[in-house]
Image (cartoon, rainbow, N blue to C red; front, top):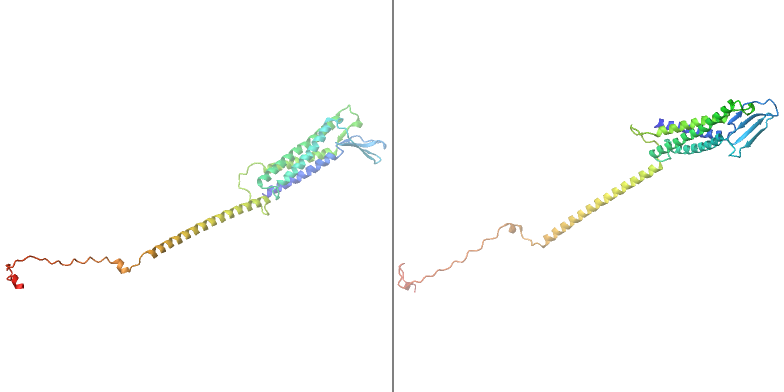
Length: 295
């Protein structure tokens, strides 16, 4: 991850140099410079033409510039160069802002997925800005060389490519290379193990998500504890009610000695003997006695 972050920083520096060079090239007046050198002191010794103004250097040291106010009177390649250079600077600035959000060594820009998308969008803008900066420089060189090789053009009207064209070429290369590095560092899915988390303070968004998860877990644990306590209290109340019912039942039952409760009940008493009487005649003397003896 450190190597990838270092590559992104290198690409960011290239993009920063590219946008600075594109802005300078857009404002410079020396896109093409006169090829002849006047020997007369009074005549102009050097003429320069840019996207927005034409300047003249005199041998006396005087310097004068004239702005190009009319847009419709300009040739097509000059109008195109103006448009593309302005768009290149705007897209380069936008891409640089997005690329700064996608840097892995920074704390802003959200999570990894958001940073990857921001870096990819910024790299795409930088690549397009580099191509837009390359178009006017190439077209300008083609026009200057064609005019220089044309035999019908007088020697005093021939020009050579100026320093602004070369600055535009170098700036387009910086922008294109920086944008390509940003795109390549974020494109494609990782097949290997994920990079370890960055050491340092986490993002605010990640901190908020972690805090919310911790609060949710604490809330769930608190609810579970309350539910368990409620169940425990209910069980205790049921046990107390059961014990009270048992005590009440024992109080209402008659108490007997333990030895009486264990012994079986006594058997009923035998019925009293009944006397049997029989009728004897006075003459009955089978036992040797008579009724008269008892009288």
